[in-house]
Image 1 (spheres, rainbow, N blue to C red):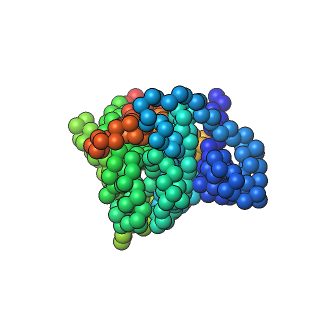
Image 2 (image 1 turned 30 degrees about the vertical axis):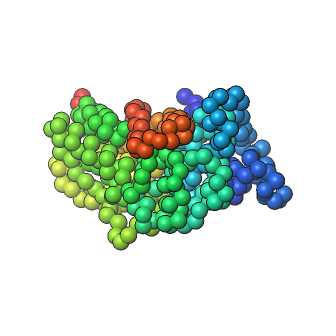
Image 3 (image 1 turned 90 degrees about the vertical axis):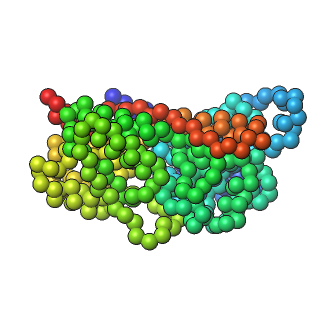
Length: 365
C-alpha cells in the first residue's frame, strides 16, 4: 500500500536552504528584512519542495476593540534542540498542525530557533508577537538550561508548550495523554500474550516518558505482567541543546543488558517511548543477528512515518496525534489571549491511537 506523502513544513524549507527557521519566517512575512542572496536561497528551497505557505483567511474585527489592539502575530519558538532533534517528524508534524490551524484566523506565524536557549529572540525584544507556542526538549530543567532573561520574557506573555512541558516551566501545555498511552500499551501487549515486558529508554528522566512509564508499569502490574527497566541514567547536569537518539550505540548497552538475562526471565516485548529510539533498537538487534518480533517484540510511540517506512517488520506504534496537538495549541493560545485575566495553567491532552504493524509477536496462539 502506498505511504501517504508528508507535506513539507517550514522546518523542511529551513533545512533545505541551510538557514534558521526564523530566516524562512522573515522571508515569508517580512522579505525586505532579509538580504537578497539569502532570500533567493530560501525561495529556491520553497520551489524545490513545492512548499505552499498557508494563506490566512481574513475575518472582520470582532467589534470589541480587541483585534485592533493586537499585532495578530504568534511566535513559534524552537528551544534547546540540536537540528537532529528539532527536525524529528513528530515535531515537524506538530508544527504543520500549527500552520494548518492559522489558515482560518487572521494570524501570522513568526518562527525562531534558539538551540542554546541563551538569548531573547528579536520578535520578543521588539514586542512583535501577542503570544508564544514553544517546543523544547523534555529532558532538563528550564531554569538551569535556559537563560534567565529568556525565561523572564516567556513568562511575561501568554504561551503554550507544544508536545509537553519541561521541568521547571510554567504555563499551558498541549500534548499526548500518556496515561492513556501507557494503559493502551500494556493492554495491547497483554492481549498478544506477553507476560514479561520491559520499558527501554536511553535517556531516563524525560518528563513525557516518565509519565508514560509510570502508566505502563501500573497497568502492566494490574494485568499480572512483570516489568523490567532498561534505562540509561545520564550523568551530571543536563545541558541544552539536546540531540536526538541517532545511533545504535545509544541503545546497544541496554539491548546487551536485555540479552544477558536468562531466557526464562528475559522480557519478550519492550515498550520504547519514541520511534526514533525504536529505529536504533532494530539496528542494534540486527547487529547481533536477532530479529524483531521473532526474538524480541517492539512497541513504540509517536508514529513518525518518515522514520519507520523502511523498517521490517513494520513497526507497531502508538500515534500521539501530533498534528492535532499543533492545531489545539493554536486554539489554546487564542483562548489565552481572549482571557488575559485567567492565570490558571491548563493542560490539554489528546488521546493517542494504536497503529498496528508486525513488530509484536502474538504469543497467545
